[in-house]
Image (cartoon, rainbow, N blue to C red):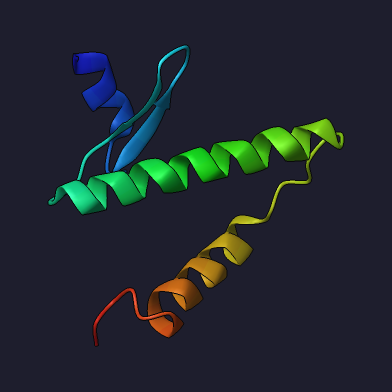
Length: 78
């Protein structure tokens, strides 16, 4: 209960060890989208680890890609 709330922070989802994804959203659809995206990210990390030590992406590159995702793919209405 409270550990999930503390762990989720500002994110819409958290992956719980030995349990799976816990997701929230303003609608069932948005919570489901967050859960699916979290599982997809976990699968990607798992597969990357099978190839060896993953290279960390610099924070500036993550922020640049996130901004592009929000602005160019229509996630934020202007």
